[in-house]
Length: 109
Image (tube, rainbow, N blue to C red):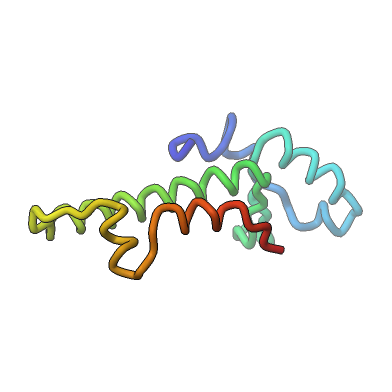
């Protein structure tokens, strides 16, 4: 996904802003759905990138994964070798596992 931002030739990804002015937005959005991405250019300068929602979500997932990996690596680097069970962590706050299980049944709206 990260290495395949554009499907096909990158030149096919460019869309002149004048196409929007000509009422072709619907066609452009269909092209975005088909290709995943379009680059809107004005005066031969990229001004905007249009992404299909699925492509955007995939990119955000990659960013989140990298953030979590960096966080985990930092925590491992500072690991003192002491670990605690989930029940011990709950007990520190005066909770039990049954408190958590019963809270899952509560319908929060």
